[in-house]
Length: 187
Image (cartoon, rainbow, N blue to C red; front, side, top):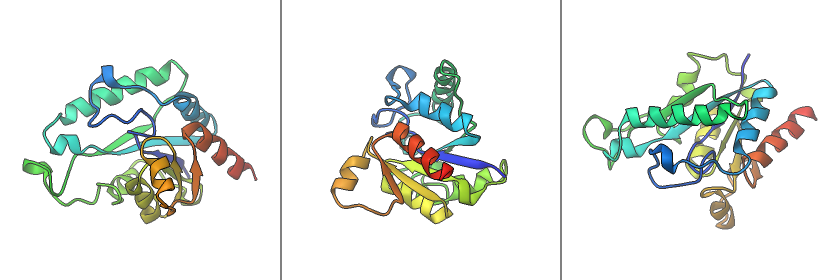
């Protein structure tokens, strides 16, 4: 079975920038490449699950999302790290345009992106995790039935300070989340 680390992208992997799609605007949060490498080294598949409402809003295209993900792959290669698969939701139920304005099961906290992963992996639910910086990420992980970690990057620290506590664990950033998972899995 496949142990999977499901990762949110914006605010978890990269510095939060509204509607990021340009490679020149991409910036890893400190320690992220090393954290992803540790997941790789510890036998986890790493799957990015990201809501990309900027596509629905017409700010950028699905091709722009794919170009950015290809760029991220190249940057991670420099660290000997990799992401196994990218899943993204291009929809928005209210602010979308055309075919992208719809209710869907893939937009987090929905589990459509997670369910789609079953086509590629035999997911070990007990050994898989969702890590993200907002309620939608944690809700999706909970709805899918896996353990969750809220990271304090992006919107996570503010949510925690406001009293949000639906997550299983909290970590200041992805690097700390990787250490936490390693500690939990070893014990």
